[in-house]
Amino acid sequence: MMTKKKVRIGMIGYKFMGKAHSHAYRDLPFFFDTEIEPVLQTLVGRDENAVRLAAEKLGWLSYETDWRRLLERDDIDVIDIGTPNSSHAEIAIAAVKAGKHVLCEKPLAMSALQAKEMWKAAEQSGVVHMICHNYRFSPAVQFAKKLIQEGVLGDIYHFRAQYLQDWIMDPEFPLVWRMRKEVTGSGTLGDLMAHSIDLSRFLVGEITEVSGLMETFIKTRPVGEMSGGLGAEASGDDRAEVDVDDAAAALARFENGAVGVFEATRFAKGNRNGNRIEINGSKGSVRWTMDQMNTLELYLEDDPIGMQGFRSINCTEVAHPYAGAYWPAGHPIGYEHTFINLMHEFMRGISGKGSSPSPTFEDGYRNQVVLDAIEQSATTGAKVSIKY
Ligand code: SOE
Image 1 (cartoon, rainbow, N blue to C red):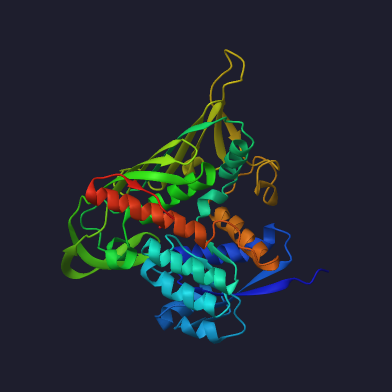
Image 2 (spheres, rainbow, N blue to C red; image 1 turned 180 degrees about the vertical axis):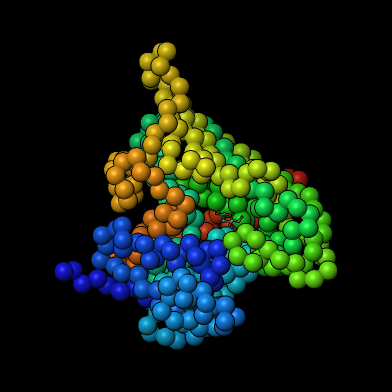
């Protein structure tokens, strides 16, 4: 029997993303034959009773109430950061300096400057670093990448993305950390459009120029906090100003000549997690939506006349990246599997020569440069060139 190398994880945060990450580490060895066994060593949260209960439920061996203690421990190899955005930089920089590999939730930081510090610190320490853009790990998105790389779509002209949600539309939905600029950095821009920018960079390439627009529809809300998942509770009668965007839009140019249109909003009634993209090339097009994440719609100009049209490819075959690790063809996977696939790459990076699999902190930094430029453009009304 192969002796597996144990990679001991210390994870900070245990709500929505904490649950997704815990599940992915636990299920990973179930599906992938790897030399690595992730160990859910220690879960961290400030509220002792809550973190103890979460550790029990999510399957962690122990808990701590201060993340700094993880850094001193030699039984922790990885720090996984699932905390609100304003704490990412402090934790990640301290962790990489302590020699820990780091996986960080998106957006990487509060600004491009901060993201660059994180990336540079990680590179200097020689640890493995990744940012958690899980959607690019959907087999259908990976297959789209393969088709584009092989030139099946020809020259790429358009990248189109919509990321539509509706969970804060009630004006009485509390002002949680995800809507407070000092904690989150931006609203839909960093939370949702960051995912679309990641997909665009993954599938099409680097962005060179953007024009942005941002809007806040509801100006004040009752003060409150997240209560798990995307639920929230008001903490009293106080109201405060919303200082981040409810919706954001951007036009972009790519290095390869393609143009991009991005839309992100939390005000699209009926769209719970509508993450969609379409790419048009000289020889064909692809479309993907999270609502049917196992399907890639493909149009090929070379199809016989009369037979042309978008076909729906069920990306559950062995030929589709990651799909073979799961079930026989035709048996779909879901949201949680995008995290398992990502964690699989992260663990492979750790078990290999220590090189960081994409998306790395550098990708997180480049993404953040685009986010900052969209915000700048939305404020000034002028288009902004991207400089890394
Ligand atoms: C909330 O908008 C949220 O949980 C995002 O923070 C995630 O990144 C996205 O995948 C789902 O929606």
